[in-house]
Length: 173
Length: 173
DNA sequence: ACTTGCATGTAAGTCGTTACATGATTGT
DNA sequence: ACAATCATGTAACGACTTACATGCAAGT
Image (cartoon, rainbow over all chains, first blue to last red):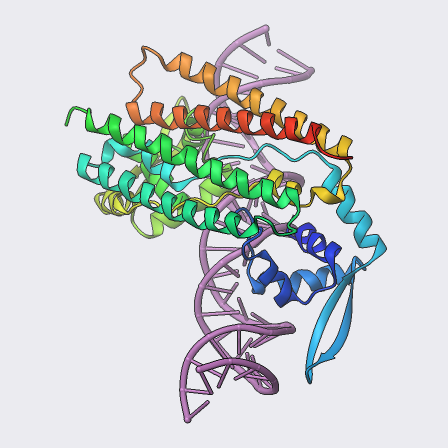
């Protein structure tokens, strides 16, 4: 899957590994992010499969490895893109701990939920300021859609955990 | 993290790897699931750390490896449980494809979203029937909370994707 | 006889992270 | 001079999955 994201970024323009990593910031980083230590080997694999082509460039006296997607790479990416995405599993540590909350005491449960809500609000603020920055820009509508999903998702979480916190207040201690 | 879930299940009673796997079904499987090929080696590691103790039992002429959590294991589990959970990242293939939707055509986008909503509805039906089965049972309230979160989460997704589908209908093709 | 479920484990492979290692350029 | 950013890569490790391999017991 990671390979297809890299190809997706190269659909826009040829890039270095470092540039792809930067491009993820503020765009995919909230639902997909990957480290440089993962990107460079991935480009190596993609090159072996001739899905990308490495171009050695000298810019400002610095050697760069710019990767360009090949026609075969485009076909590969579009074939992946066409397939209906699989339903995502929830995989949250917070739910896992909640599942075992009978083993924690009431103050711990309350603290968890309050701190979790704080974290949700922090993330929410980031996403909202990101979207505000995109207003009036030429950013694609689908990029904005992913951001909107993120914002609504964290709002949903905030609502849910606030209600949960209330219900904890009513628990018999 | 996986290790702590195994310990969490053993907090209830000593179990075999197979039993833990079964216990996940209908309880944690919607937000955490793991394969037997992962559970058995994990118990081996936990035993080396003396967090669990293997007990060889003969039941119905069959040899079983029943694992019991040790006092040290309990301490380890409770220490993990106490720490505030980290904010979960969204990591959904559907959002990733959405991000690149300018490269797909309108019928593909529509098909994706409709099929995704179908999958969400299927999952929702599973969760709702699970919860209905839990009504009146002695199931812990926190286990029910995790289920409720799941149900509300998939309802949120259904709403969001239905609105998104509508907005796709209005797109300039 | 056959299939399903119980039960345990290993091996190979995928996917990804963090830390290590290096070095140039740009801005203060 | 110093820090930050640009830029590339490797090594070690961790977490997990699927497939392989085995075998008994219970139900049909």
